[in-house]
Image (cartoon, rainbow, N blue to C red; front, side, top):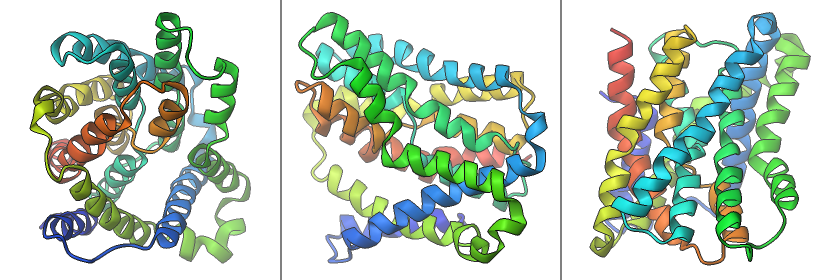
Length: 309
């Protein structure tokens, strides 16, 4: 049987395909997102509280470099093989260089369920990898088209103060500063409720995925093939770095899931504001409609089973 959180995603996807009237109210989804981001951050902060001395800056810098390497690898493929224009190639490269918090949470949940060890800095991988690709691709596109909206400084400020970044970093700092004793009054809800938040979040993600690819726009078949295949080679970048750094098995799984993922929250907001010529619908089709379900339903469970041997 698949992990329960994956079953919730499949349920939402099935409900969406069947055009059910099932829906998660927008206000509930916003609360779930806040609680999930805080829970991820606090769990990482608690691990740091227990073993912060083991973290090496060089490791974090190498992980952060993946956020620059991936979009540089993906951009030429999108330009020449998928045949996208510069605006859409930069947009989608930014989405694939950035990461998905939902995919991170699924990998973390599978690692915990399998009893795989997780390094204390694992949550920091999500924070570190969220922004570099977005900034790099916006800079690249600005070099090609000086009419990009806003300055790079303004884009940096907007990215660093986005809801997800604030909640993740804030959660890490709270968990690290207060530790288990200080967080005891809320630990049962915010930390213990992690899988419940994730399950309901994935239910909504399943519904969203069904809406994105119905009907499937076959005229973009090159992009569909790219989005279906890209997670598999990209995951090997995360695996290679994880093994090079001798990370514990759970952290290797999470890092591979991150490099295989594509952003559908942070990147769309930044690209929509800065690259007016980009079609965000294409990016959402690829990242949320194709790559996300393949990762959640097939790729990450297979990786988890393989690494857990």
